[in-house]
Image (tube, rainbow, N blue to C red):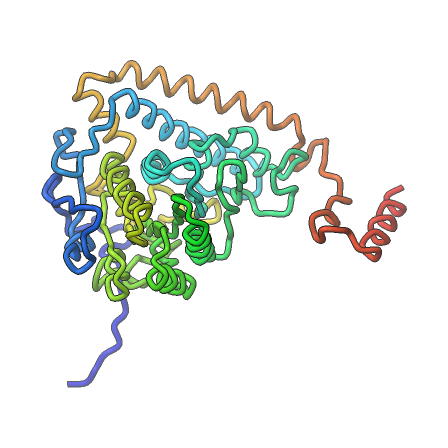
Length: 409
């Protein structure tokens, strides 16, 4: 019998019935929670099973239940809703031609908010381009994020970056990079430095399932494993890397969470649309890292509800109704129903909050336009292109700046 080249194929294409049988779900509450100091060899099952807390009846179950105060869950729900309303508005604005590009985190809001809740302010975050909720949670103003997308006079990147490539130094959030997976080695290196200095801070980074095929993913994992860096390496498995099914990155054979086991790095596979489960797993990994237990690789099983970006049409490569069939549901709806089941939320309160958040986002958009748009003044000063290149601007750049200003005059 001759060998044959295997080509990964998605379980469903446009016009076909969605099929998520490959996910291998575990019932809520059935996965044991090991002690912080458990050896990797003793907890290999966590990389295959799926940690879940919220069941289909909207109740929190099992040893991973973090027992978060309902008031804090209401706050978490608000942050997720704000992220979605912000995304919806910015998507519409791009479609109107008022910004050049945008990427939503539709369906993935629980990842940023739950993990933001589990981390401490001193922990350093190295995000990907669907972590806008993390920026909001850590205090980045809506106006500042909108101004970055507009590349106007208040743009935090001074017009030098693609829209949605935010940063926030005061909130310990590193710059987003369009070069995929580069943030992973940065996170491992920052964590190693924190350990050298004797700090109890940890680093956390996020990549998508497709980015695990990048060399930087493996470099970071190796360094983190060898030096036992206090870092949390997150793989947000939203099933699609643009138009490429997660199987092309190696997700067919074993879960992404299992990739660190050969290096002695524990992996945990978690329901990425269950805010309680994501919070509990992240807190476990952070506590382990702070106590000298080294890195943890977390795979967050979720689904990209919308297009990859405003440049993408997902109806060309997957069933149109695939998100509505995703067995782990909508993270916002699940937390909302949990709070309702607990008697701590109502449909009326949800509708009221949605309206308030839309008004908040609209007000921020109106304010951001005061600092300029792509077609309306004020505009960025072109002379700023010479700034921030060297600590002290060399004479030849000063000469070029003066020449440019003379030409403009």
